Length: 254
Image (cartoon, rainbow, N blue to C red):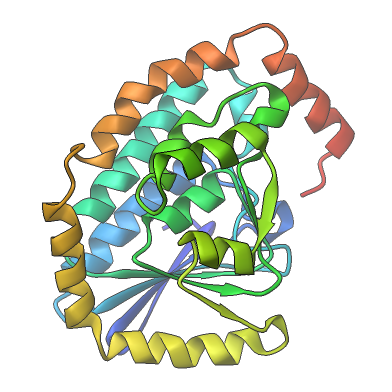
């Protein structure tokens, strides 16, 4: 398993960590594929009752997709779309509930990962948003993922404005399950992980109830239908230039 994705076990809890802290855990296509593999691996373990997602480093859970990879054009966007849909498929197929621990920056595709989780425990320093519109792109894939947690008008508002929201507002909207103080987040979050691990069977039923009530079909199928729109949007005048200009300003910093 690549070092950008780490897997660990502690009793009945399996942990998957995004481990690219120097780049604020920006998600590459390879990381998405490996994250899907990690979900399948832990879900197949008979004694794993809860899967925890977390991000290494102080910058945050994940600043979103790796824009340097996106700047490669349509082929890279298509591969990323396939990987995102595959991750959604892996999550939907899993019986094991998923809990996300989120702190700091959680943007774009990183915010989308939170929408795939059953429970989201956030630090009160969370910065949550879908900033793709700043480059002239509508975040179609992230919008689709957000529909798992919020009504369509909320997903559209966040996607169209690109505004960031904090942990409290995210919790009020239903994007976050619980908010904990940043000062003692690690210790407090572990207590909540233990709480949910003890109630993992109930969360498994919650997943089944949600799946039974899904009238729009698997999220992966929706993401695949949206993938051509993402490519078309990226190829619109000015979008690729905006991404490259942002990378130039960033100067390689995470």
